[in-house]
Image (cartoon, rainbow, N blue to C red):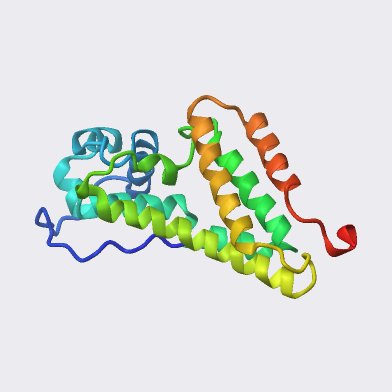
Length: 214
C-alpha cells in the first residue's frame, strides 16, 4: 500500500540547486528507524540530521520538510506500496493471506537490526492537532490493508472456500487488531516466538472450510 502523498504545502525552506552530497537511501533509512523508534512528534529535526549525517539545509533540499520526510519513510517501510497487496493477492486463500500478513508482522516487529514493533503503530503517540495529517496518513494505510483483506475474504465466501455467513468485516478487523497488539507487545519486549504463537492462536479462531463444518 502506497503511503498517501502529503498535501500541498508551501516549502518551509528554499531548495538549492546544488547536487546532493550524501547517500539519500541510507539517510532515509536512518530517518525511518528514528521515526520507528521514537514516533513522529518526538523526533526532532536535530535528531534526524544527526542520525542521517546531513545538515538541516540538506534535509530540506532533499526531502522538503519533516512531514514529507516522514511520508517518504513510511512509503519505504511499506515497500513502495506494493508489498502488502502483493502478499494478499499471491496467497491461495484468504485464510493463508491472513496468516501470511500476521506472520510478516510478527517477524517485522522483532527484527534484529530494526526497532521493535511496527512503524505505523509506533509513529503516532500524540493527539496534537499539529500531527493530524500524519495520523490520517497512517490510519488510511491501515484502512486500506483491512479493506483489501476483507475483499479477499468476501471472494472466498462467494467461491465457497469459506462457510456462508462468514463475517468478513470482523475477520479483517480482527487481523488488524492482532497486528496492532503484536506491535505493542514487541515494544514491551515480547520475542518472535511469542508473537508467532499469537498468530497461531488468532488463526485457530477462523471458521473452518465448508467441508470441515458440514
